[in-house]
Length: 354
Length: 124
Image (cartoon, rainbow over all chains, first blue to last red; front, side):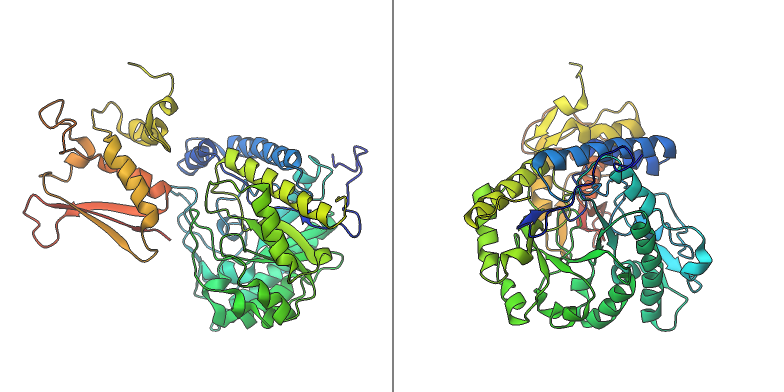
């Protein structure tokens, strides 16, 4: 039963809400959950057990977010092995010859031997709408769903089907667009595209944006584009700056950019002013690559420095990336500090908050 | 003394006996050094490795690579001294959980010598 069906009103953030707090997507995976995921990979527990374990973990993740005071929550992506495989394993035409893994977090070796089917030929979706439905019934807070973008998915596929590799990216984008439409039909209004591999291929920004615009062609959805420098085992995959995004990213049909600034500092904030980015910014204020918990004052300081470049009504607040590698206790504390830091600045701005 | 749970065995500040579980489950009743010092040192060193770097450690004492998996040479003269026997599967497991491939092999330049090389590098 959905929250609406059981009589609960699905809350919406009031118009003009300043500094809304949210997460990027993934939530802390405790060591025991990782071990259980490995047990499933090694055939020690069955799929139905794992599904139940995931559902219990998702309930706890949502409760953690609500108790921390997060305004827009996610399911913590706790069903997903990593940022790539959950989707790749569900896309018809993507072949994964070896599905057993020693460690759940490892990437599959995926390949495409024939052109992918078009969405109209697929019949069933990728399952994200059902995931959203499960989350929706657990909370009356706004829920965000993240989708790994077509460019990043393509980087983990051995292409044997398309003479032009860009056609694989476009084909993936069409399939993700169909899934986004399914999500919208299920009631999802806050969707996010994650492109964790884009920073490693800055020369492909035009292709990535073309593909993102295919995905986001869905009415009545607020889209966020998250670009980071990777988060494998709490280590960045890439180095560099966000210069490569601009001005090309202005051609994306997204409402908000979610970027990392806690770990990297404020140097790239100037780009938003320089290139007159006039849409929303999800400001990364929590470093997800360390267990050290920020103080509310540190978070507030990071928000204040962003306000030099971005108007408060355009700003929302989030961790740099997913909290997957942060221990649960630290993750809870970091979210609490983020909410408290945002409240400090909101008070300075004379806003009561959501 | 029996433990209530592996997690109660504190190997180091951020390491508990849970690290041992996979080895205990896969290898059964084994006698093997945990080697807390080497394990902690290894765990502390891995994050310092450059993404394209390799950590190489040469061992001058172990005559057979299999001793890293099953060798138990104590209690004896060297137990707790400057010479310690390394638990290879534990190092591999620890590395794997942190995203590193860890290999132990005979010293490539002199395979017949009593020199073994541990190599750790970032896994994709």
